[in-house]
Length: 534
Image (cartoon, rainbow, N blue to C red):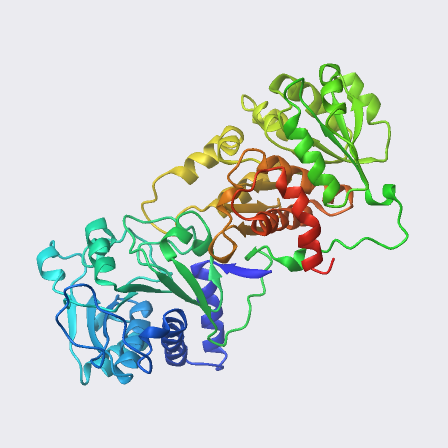
């Protein structure tokens, strides 16, 4: 899986490489600046000085296509600003007209950034703004009348306080509209200024980018919370560093975690038997969606456990799925005497009262268990009573509202407006919840975070090239619960099952595309598997 680093983890990687003598800080800065320029030309070939200049905005009376393209580079008081000075120099060497603005005291720049500031200043001007000046709206907006590019090198991964003062007005709607109307592209170095690299939370204001260029690997803030909406397109450029070796590093889910091939010659019971409990009459659709997902993902058998009132309704709707009457706690206990039932799912439209009765029985059976929806909300008044019964082979799958009901103090901390950085992140929240519950927690959303009690954590991000907004449809979460249950039935460990299921969930949505409804998700699995040579 791909690393998703915090700012501190990235700093350790860079420091280790520098102290080992493999590379100098100046060399890293040069490679970063070159990576930004390369990414700009890859994304917008028309901005390459060897290509045609982009068309100017209507009414513009300035240079024709033979004249230099224009860039403004905003540099901050740290090494992110140093990267900006490198970008400015490289663009100038390619024939661009470049203006550079520095937010900070040149005398206080870090050593490597100071070197690149001085290199630029040997032949070029730097317009300097003091930190936290008086309002500068009128003075500040004396940018060139026409700009092709704005490079944001003000604050990178090290932002620890709300972004204010000079340049922060670029985060305001009028300034953004002005830039867009001029046709200027906004490129952020590492992270857009104002975005917390660890959490994806905006500290005060953020300069929204058309493209963000980061180095070595993605950072957590690129995929969590406001990150995707603020970063625009995300490009990753190598600067020659080694991967982190730390099992507490968060990773992005990927295809490598999906190992689903069945052993040849196996029979259906060798691939597990899942029991998914349904609500009463008129409330069976969610459980049927989950069951279809469990069966499609490879469980050998899937049985729907239904109350008497729903037997005829469910029987008329299913074929490959099996049906079992489960009336109350005694009925469930009796069904669970069949030890071949090795994975359980409770929650999708189960009903709060039915959940309160059946969840303790299911957990006492010590089978791999997914608790979703009503199975979580049923214990909102006393989450501790649920946690006391949970065992390590459980997976909880809350969305934001359910998470807040089970973990109100953690949710309050997560939802508080951040006043400094690194801000509390969804990954922090999921890890804390997993430790408290004593099992794997799948904190759902476009930035689904999967955490285990031992601190291992991954993010399944449906953003950037994996965006699938049509997953926001009724029943999609029920299918995900079924996917996880089916993989548990097949013998996957809870964390592995959750990661693989979440990744496949997004792949199925991308396979179908816009217009998808929840029923379509399980039916995409065969095509997804074929593409993966499974």
